[in-house]
Amino acid sequence: MNEILLIGILLFGGYLGGKLIAKIKVPAVTGYILVGLAFGVSSLKLIPWEWNLKLSWLIDFALLLIAFHIGGELRLSKLRKMGKAIVLIVSLETLVTYSLLLVGMLLVGQSLALSLIIASIGAATAPAVTVLVLNEYRAQGPLTQTLLACVGIDDAYGLALYSVSASLAHSLFSGTHIFPLRLGGIVLAEIALSVLGGMIAGVILDFLLRRVKYPAEVLIMIVGGITLAGGLLQEGMWGLRFSPLLGAMAAGFYLTNYSPKRREAFAPLGDFGYPFYTIYFVLAGARLKVKLLFHLGWVAVVYLLGRFSGKILGASLGGILSHAPKQVRKYTGMGLFSQAGIAIGLCLVAAKEFPQAGDVIVAIALGTTIVTEIIGPFSTKYAITKAGEVGKMVRKP
Image (tube, rainbow, N blue to C red; front, side, top):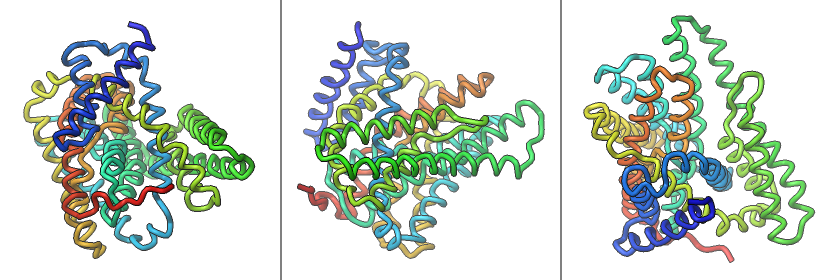
Protein backbone atom coordinates (compact mmCIF):
# COMPACT_ATOMS: atom_id res chain seq x y z
CA MET A 1 0.00 0.00 0.00
CA ASN A 2 1.23 3.50 -0.82
CA GLU A 3 0.59 6.74 1.07
CA ILE A 4 -1.89 8.17 -1.46
CA LEU A 5 -4.00 5.01 -1.44
CA LEU A 6 -4.02 4.97 2.35
CA ILE A 7 -5.17 8.60 2.57
CA GLY A 8 -7.95 7.76 0.10
CA ILE A 9 -9.07 4.85 2.24
CA LEU A 10 -9.05 7.01 5.35
CA LEU A 11 -11.05 9.85 3.81
CA PHE A 12 -13.51 7.87 1.69
CA GLY A 13 -14.03 5.13 4.26
CA GLY A 14 -14.41 7.64 7.07
CA TYR A 15 -16.90 9.71 5.09
CA LEU A 16 -19.06 6.72 4.21
CA GLY A 17 -18.92 5.45 7.79
CA GLY A 18 -19.97 8.83 9.14
CA LYS A 19 -22.87 9.14 6.68
CA LEU A 20 -24.12 5.62 7.31
CA ILE A 21 -24.05 5.88 11.08
CA ALA A 22 -25.71 9.31 10.95
CA LYS A 23 -28.75 7.55 9.44
CA ILE A 24 -29.43 5.99 12.83
CA LYS A 25 -29.05 9.36 14.64
CA VAL A 26 -25.54 8.60 15.88
CA PRO A 27 -22.81 11.31 15.78
CA ALA A 28 -20.69 11.00 12.62
CA VAL A 29 -17.48 10.97 14.66
CA THR A 30 -18.49 7.57 16.06
CA GLY A 31 -18.70 6.32 12.49
CA TYR A 32 -15.16 7.55 11.78
CA ILE A 33 -13.85 5.71 14.83
CA LEU A 34 -15.72 2.50 13.99
CA VAL A 35 -14.35 2.58 10.44
CA GLY A 36 -10.88 2.95 11.94
CA LEU A 37 -11.51 -0.03 14.20
CA ALA A 38 -12.62 -2.09 11.21
CA PHE A 39 -9.59 -1.11 9.11
CA GLY A 40 -7.02 -1.14 11.91
CA VAL A 41 -4.96 -3.49 14.02
CA SER A 42 -7.99 -4.98 15.77
CA SER A 43 -9.68 -6.25 12.61
CA LEU A 44 -8.79 -6.14 8.87
CA LYS A 45 -5.31 -4.67 9.41
CA LEU A 46 -5.59 -2.50 6.28
CA ILE A 47 -3.92 0.22 8.35
CA PRO A 48 -1.12 -1.55 10.24
CA TRP A 49 0.52 0.01 13.28
CA GLU A 50 3.67 1.15 11.45
CA TRP A 51 1.62 3.03 8.84
CA ASN A 52 -0.39 4.64 11.59
CA LEU A 53 2.82 5.92 13.15
CA LYS A 54 4.03 7.25 9.79
CA LEU A 55 0.88 9.35 9.52
CA SER A 56 0.90 10.52 13.14
CA TRP A 57 1.87 14.02 11.94
CA LEU A 58 -1.64 14.29 10.45
CA ILE A 59 -3.08 13.65 13.90
CA ASP A 60 -0.86 16.38 15.36
CA PHE A 61 -1.88 18.76 12.56
CA ALA A 62 -5.59 18.11 13.07
CA LEU A 63 -5.22 18.67 16.83
CA LEU A 64 -3.53 22.03 16.18
CA LEU A 65 -6.47 23.15 14.03
CA ILE A 66 -8.93 21.99 16.69
CA ALA A 67 -7.02 23.79 19.45
CA PHE A 68 -6.96 26.97 17.36
CA HIS A 69 -10.72 26.66 16.84
CA ILE A 70 -11.28 26.21 20.58
CA GLY A 71 -9.24 29.33 21.31
CA GLY A 72 -11.42 31.18 18.83
CA GLU A 73 -14.51 30.25 20.83
CA LEU A 74 -13.12 31.69 24.08
CA ARG A 75 -14.51 35.20 23.69
CA LEU A 76 -13.76 37.35 26.73
CA SER A 77 -17.23 38.89 26.60
CA LYS A 78 -18.78 35.45 27.02
CA LEU A 79 -16.23 34.22 29.56
CA ARG A 80 -16.80 37.28 31.77
CA LYS A 81 -20.48 36.36 31.99
CA MET A 82 -19.55 32.83 33.05
CA GLY A 83 -16.37 33.86 34.92
CA LYS A 84 -16.26 32.02 38.22
CA ALA A 85 -18.39 29.18 36.87
CA ILE A 86 -15.84 28.23 34.21
CA VAL A 87 -12.90 28.34 36.63
CA LEU A 88 -14.64 26.20 39.25
CA ILE A 89 -16.14 23.71 36.78
CA VAL A 90 -12.88 23.10 34.90
CA SER A 91 -10.81 22.95 38.07
CA LEU A 92 -13.08 20.55 39.88
CA GLU A 93 -13.93 18.25 36.97
CA THR A 94 -10.20 17.81 36.31
CA LEU A 95 -9.04 17.49 39.91
CA VAL A 96 -11.88 15.22 41.05
CA THR A 97 -11.26 12.92 38.07
CA TYR A 98 -7.53 12.90 38.79
CA SER A 99 -8.12 12.09 42.49
CA LEU A 100 -10.61 9.28 41.80
CA LEU A 101 -8.34 7.71 39.19
CA LEU A 102 -5.31 7.93 41.49
CA VAL A 103 -7.16 6.24 44.36
CA GLY A 104 -8.75 3.70 42.02
CA MET A 105 -5.42 2.65 40.47
CA LEU A 106 -3.90 2.23 43.94
CA LEU A 107 -6.88 0.10 45.04
CA VAL A 108 -6.41 -2.33 42.13
CA GLY A 109 -2.76 -2.83 43.01
CA GLN A 110 -0.87 -0.40 40.75
CA SER A 111 2.25 1.29 42.10
CA LEU A 112 2.11 4.92 43.22
CA ALA A 113 4.38 6.05 40.36
CA LEU A 114 2.27 4.32 37.72
CA SER A 115 -0.97 5.48 39.36
CA LEU A 116 0.19 9.10 39.18
CA ILE A 117 0.90 8.81 35.46
CA ILE A 118 -2.37 7.02 34.64
CA ALA A 119 -4.41 9.52 36.68
CA SER A 120 -2.86 12.50 34.89
CA ILE A 121 -3.52 10.97 31.46
CA GLY A 122 -7.10 10.06 32.37
CA ALA A 123 -7.94 13.52 33.72
CA ALA A 124 -7.56 15.16 30.30
CA THR A 125 -10.48 15.59 27.89
CA ALA A 126 -10.30 15.24 24.11
CA PRO A 127 -11.42 18.51 22.50
CA ALA A 128 -11.81 17.04 19.01
CA VAL A 129 -14.83 14.82 19.69
CA THR A 130 -16.69 17.46 21.65
CA VAL A 131 -16.06 20.20 19.07
CA LEU A 132 -17.16 18.06 16.12
CA VAL A 133 -20.35 16.87 17.84
CA LEU A 134 -21.27 20.45 18.80
CA ASN A 135 -20.65 21.61 15.23
CA GLU A 136 -22.50 18.67 13.67
CA TYR A 137 -25.63 19.42 15.68
CA ARG A 138 -25.21 23.22 15.43
CA ALA A 139 -25.40 23.58 19.20
CA GLN A 140 -25.42 26.97 20.86
CA GLY A 141 -26.15 28.11 24.41
CA PRO A 142 -24.74 28.20 27.97
CA LEU A 143 -23.90 24.47 28.04
CA THR A 144 -22.20 24.60 24.62
CA GLN A 145 -20.07 27.59 25.65
CA THR A 146 -19.17 25.87 28.91
CA LEU A 147 -18.12 22.70 27.10
CA LEU A 148 -15.97 24.62 24.61
CA ALA A 149 -14.29 26.54 27.41
CA CYS A 150 -13.81 23.35 29.44
CA VAL A 151 -12.16 21.31 26.68
CA GLY A 152 -9.86 24.22 25.91
CA ILE A 153 -8.74 25.04 29.43
CA ASP A 154 -8.81 21.35 30.35
CA ASP A 155 -5.79 20.80 28.10
CA ALA A 156 -3.77 23.25 30.17
CA TYR A 157 -4.78 21.47 33.38
CA GLY A 158 -4.05 18.08 31.84
CA LEU A 159 -0.58 19.12 30.74
CA ALA A 160 0.15 20.65 34.14
CA LEU A 161 -1.00 17.53 35.97
CA TYR A 162 1.07 15.33 33.68
CA SER A 163 4.17 17.48 34.19
CA VAL A 164 3.81 17.29 37.97
CA SER A 165 2.93 13.58 37.97
CA ALA A 166 5.75 12.65 35.56
CA SER A 167 8.30 14.50 37.68
CA LEU A 168 7.06 12.75 40.83
CA ALA A 169 7.04 9.39 39.02
CA HIS A 170 10.65 9.90 37.89
CA SER A 171 11.55 10.60 41.50
CA LEU A 172 9.77 7.46 42.72
CA PHE A 173 11.24 5.22 40.04
CA SER A 174 14.77 6.50 40.62
CA GLY A 175 14.53 6.97 44.38
CA THR A 176 15.64 10.62 44.20
CA HIS A 177 13.99 13.63 45.80
CA ILE A 178 12.59 16.59 43.85
CA PHE A 179 12.34 19.96 45.56
CA PRO A 180 8.62 20.94 45.39
CA LEU A 181 9.24 24.61 44.61
CA ARG A 182 11.52 23.72 41.72
CA LEU A 183 8.93 21.30 40.36
CA GLY A 184 6.20 23.94 40.58
CA GLY A 185 8.41 26.48 38.84
CA ILE A 186 9.11 24.09 35.96
CA VAL A 187 5.41 23.38 35.43
CA LEU A 188 4.44 27.06 35.54
CA ALA A 189 7.26 27.95 33.15
CA GLU A 190 6.16 25.30 30.64
CA ILE A 191 2.55 26.50 30.67
CA ALA A 192 3.39 30.21 30.66
CA LEU A 193 5.91 29.93 27.80
CA SER A 194 3.50 27.80 25.75
CA VAL A 195 0.80 30.45 26.12
CA LEU A 196 3.29 33.26 25.46
CA GLY A 197 4.48 31.56 22.26
CA GLY A 198 0.90 31.25 21.06
CA MET A 199 0.07 34.86 21.91
CA ILE A 200 3.15 36.06 19.99
CA ALA A 201 1.98 34.00 17.02
CA GLY A 202 -1.45 35.62 17.34
CA VAL A 203 0.06 39.12 17.35
CA ILE A 204 2.11 38.38 14.23
CA LEU A 205 -0.87 36.83 12.44
CA ASP A 206 -3.04 39.81 13.35
CA PHE A 207 -0.41 42.18 11.88
CA LEU A 208 -0.28 40.16 8.64
CA LEU A 209 -4.05 39.69 8.37
CA ARG A 210 -4.55 43.45 8.17
CA ARG A 211 -2.48 43.44 4.96
CA VAL A 212 -4.04 40.63 2.90
CA LYS A 213 -7.20 40.68 0.84
CA TYR A 214 -8.05 37.20 -0.41
CA PRO A 215 -9.42 34.24 1.62
CA ALA A 216 -6.87 31.86 0.07
CA GLU A 217 -4.02 34.03 1.36
CA VAL A 218 -5.62 34.15 4.80
CA LEU A 219 -5.90 30.35 4.88
CA ILE A 220 -2.23 29.90 3.95
CA MET A 221 -1.17 32.46 6.53
CA ILE A 222 -3.25 31.02 9.38
CA VAL A 223 -2.31 27.38 8.73
CA GLY A 224 1.33 28.33 8.23
CA GLY A 225 1.41 30.43 11.40
CA ILE A 226 -0.24 27.77 13.55
CA THR A 227 2.04 24.98 12.33
CA LEU A 228 5.17 27.13 12.57
CA ALA A 229 4.39 28.14 16.16
CA GLY A 230 3.32 24.58 17.06
CA GLY A 231 6.47 23.09 15.57
CA LEU A 232 8.73 25.51 17.43
CA LEU A 233 6.96 24.78 20.72
CA GLN A 234 7.22 21.04 20.11
CA GLU A 235 10.99 21.37 19.89
CA GLY A 236 11.16 22.55 23.51
CA MET A 237 13.97 24.54 25.06
CA TRP A 238 16.14 24.55 28.20
CA GLY A 239 14.93 21.05 29.04
CA LEU A 240 11.30 22.21 29.23
CA ARG A 241 8.35 20.53 27.45
CA PHE A 242 6.07 23.06 25.79
CA SER A 243 2.54 22.43 24.52
CA PRO A 244 1.82 23.09 20.82
CA LEU A 245 -1.90 22.66 21.55
CA LEU A 246 -1.85 25.27 24.28
CA GLY A 247 0.06 27.58 21.93
CA ALA A 248 -2.45 27.12 19.10
CA MET A 249 -5.31 27.76 21.51
CA ALA A 250 -3.62 30.95 22.76
CA ALA A 251 -3.18 32.17 19.16
CA GLY A 252 -6.87 31.60 18.46
CA PHE A 253 -7.79 33.31 21.73
CA TYR A 254 -5.75 36.41 20.82
CA LEU A 255 -7.21 36.71 17.33
CA THR A 256 -10.84 36.27 18.39
CA ASN A 257 -10.54 38.87 21.16
CA TYR A 258 -8.11 41.48 19.83
CA SER A 259 -8.06 41.32 16.03
CA PRO A 260 -10.50 43.35 13.88
CA LYS A 261 -10.06 40.57 11.31
CA ARG A 262 -11.34 37.83 13.63
CA ARG A 263 -14.06 36.67 11.27
CA GLU A 264 -11.72 36.52 8.29
CA ALA A 265 -9.18 34.57 10.37
CA PHE A 266 -11.52 31.70 11.27
CA ALA A 267 -13.88 31.50 8.29
CA PRO A 268 -11.49 29.76 5.83
CA LEU A 269 -10.75 26.99 8.34
CA GLY A 270 -14.39 25.94 8.56
CA ASP A 271 -14.38 23.54 5.62
CA PHE A 272 -10.61 23.17 5.27
CA GLY A 273 -10.18 21.29 8.55
CA TYR A 274 -12.81 18.56 8.10
CA PRO A 275 -10.75 16.17 5.90
CA PHE A 276 -7.99 16.28 8.53
CA TYR A 277 -10.49 15.71 11.35
CA THR A 278 -11.81 12.66 9.48
CA ILE A 279 -8.29 11.28 9.03
CA TYR A 280 -7.55 11.94 12.71
CA PHE A 281 -10.52 9.93 13.99
CA VAL A 282 -10.10 7.05 11.56
CA LEU A 283 -6.42 6.77 12.50
CA ALA A 284 -7.30 6.99 16.20
CA GLY A 285 -9.76 4.11 15.76
CA ALA A 286 -7.26 2.13 13.69
CA ARG A 287 -4.61 2.15 16.43
CA LEU A 288 -6.96 0.92 19.18
CA LYS A 289 -6.36 -2.68 20.26
CA VAL A 290 -9.64 -4.19 21.47
CA LYS A 291 -7.96 -7.22 23.06
CA LEU A 292 -6.09 -4.90 25.45
CA LEU A 293 -9.38 -3.89 27.01
CA PHE A 294 -10.21 -7.48 27.96
CA HIS A 295 -6.72 -8.17 29.32
CA LEU A 296 -6.99 -5.22 31.72
CA GLY A 297 -9.94 -6.63 33.66
CA TRP A 298 -10.75 -4.69 36.83
CA VAL A 299 -8.11 -2.08 36.06
CA ALA A 300 -10.12 -0.99 33.00
CA VAL A 301 -13.41 -1.06 34.91
CA VAL A 302 -12.05 1.07 37.75
CA TYR A 303 -10.37 3.46 35.31
CA LEU A 304 -13.58 4.02 33.32
CA LEU A 305 -15.74 4.38 36.45
CA GLY A 306 -13.26 6.84 37.94
CA ARG A 307 -13.14 8.92 34.77
CA PHE A 308 -16.89 9.05 34.13
CA SER A 309 -17.88 9.68 37.75
CA GLY A 310 -15.08 12.23 38.21
CA LYS A 311 -16.22 14.31 35.25
CA ILE A 312 -19.87 14.26 36.30
CA LEU A 313 -19.29 14.87 40.02
CA GLY A 314 -16.59 17.49 39.53
CA ALA A 315 -18.49 19.49 36.90
CA SER A 316 -21.72 19.32 38.91
CA LEU A 317 -19.99 20.46 42.09
CA GLY A 318 -18.29 23.32 40.26
CA GLY A 319 -21.61 24.36 38.74
CA ILE A 320 -23.39 24.27 42.10
CA LEU A 321 -20.69 26.28 43.90
CA SER A 322 -20.65 28.91 41.14
CA HIS A 323 -24.45 29.06 40.78
CA ALA A 324 -24.25 28.17 37.08
CA PRO A 325 -27.45 27.63 35.05
CA LYS A 326 -29.27 24.37 35.70
CA GLN A 327 -28.40 22.80 32.34
CA VAL A 328 -24.72 23.58 32.93
CA ARG A 329 -24.74 22.00 36.40
CA LYS A 330 -26.61 18.94 35.20
CA TYR A 331 -25.05 18.08 31.85
CA THR A 332 -21.51 19.50 31.59
CA GLY A 333 -19.81 16.37 32.89
CA MET A 334 -21.57 14.20 30.29
CA GLY A 335 -19.99 16.22 27.49
CA LEU A 336 -16.45 15.55 28.74
CA PHE A 337 -16.16 11.75 28.53
CA SER A 338 -13.99 11.48 25.41
CA GLN A 339 -10.28 11.04 26.07
CA ALA A 340 -8.52 10.58 22.69
CA GLY A 341 -6.26 13.32 21.37
CA ILE A 342 -4.21 14.70 24.22
CA ALA A 343 -4.66 11.48 26.24
CA ILE A 344 -3.23 9.40 23.38
CA GLY A 345 -0.43 11.92 22.95
CA LEU A 346 0.42 11.91 26.66
CA CYS A 347 0.19 8.12 26.69
CA LEU A 348 2.80 7.80 23.94
CA VAL A 349 5.00 10.42 25.61
CA ALA A 350 4.74 8.58 28.94
CA ALA A 351 5.58 5.24 27.30
CA LYS A 352 8.85 6.77 26.02
CA GLU A 353 9.62 8.50 29.34
CA PHE A 354 8.92 5.41 31.43
CA PRO A 355 9.92 2.36 29.37
CA GLN A 356 9.77 0.19 32.51
CA ALA A 357 5.99 0.76 32.60
CA GLY A 358 5.34 1.61 28.94
CA ASP A 359 3.31 -1.50 28.07
CA VAL A 360 0.96 -1.03 31.02
CA ILE A 361 0.49 2.69 30.30
CA VAL A 362 -0.34 2.05 26.64
CA ALA A 363 -2.66 -0.84 27.53
CA ILE A 364 -4.69 1.20 30.02
CA ALA A 365 -4.84 4.47 28.08
CA LEU A 366 -5.41 3.06 24.59
CA GLY A 367 -7.53 0.11 25.69
CA THR A 368 -10.06 2.25 27.54
CA THR A 369 -10.08 4.84 24.75
CA ILE A 370 -12.17 2.37 22.73
CA VAL A 371 -14.97 2.74 25.26
CA THR A 372 -14.66 6.49 25.86
CA GLU A 373 -14.56 7.28 22.13
CA ILE A 374 -17.73 5.31 21.46
CA ILE A 375 -19.63 6.52 24.53
CA GLY A 376 -18.30 10.10 24.38
CA PRO A 377 -20.13 11.29 21.23
CA PHE A 378 -23.39 9.75 22.45
CA SER A 379 -23.14 11.39 25.87
CA THR A 380 -22.27 14.81 24.36
CA LYS A 381 -25.22 14.59 21.99
CA TYR A 382 -27.50 13.55 24.86
CA ALA A 383 -26.31 16.48 26.98
CA ILE A 384 -26.89 19.21 24.37
CA THR A 385 -30.22 17.64 23.39
CA LYS A 386 -31.52 17.59 26.96
CA ALA A 387 -30.26 21.16 27.44
CA GLY A 388 -32.28 22.26 24.39
CA GLU A 389 -29.29 23.66 22.50
CA VAL A 390 -29.36 21.51 19.34
CA GLY A 391 -29.85 23.53 16.14
CA LYS A 392 -29.53 26.91 17.88
CA MET A 393 -26.32 27.97 16.11
CA VAL A 394 -26.85 30.60 13.42
CA ARG A 395 -24.65 29.98 10.39
CA LYS A 396 -22.53 32.99 9.47
CA PRO A 397 -22.72 34.11 5.84
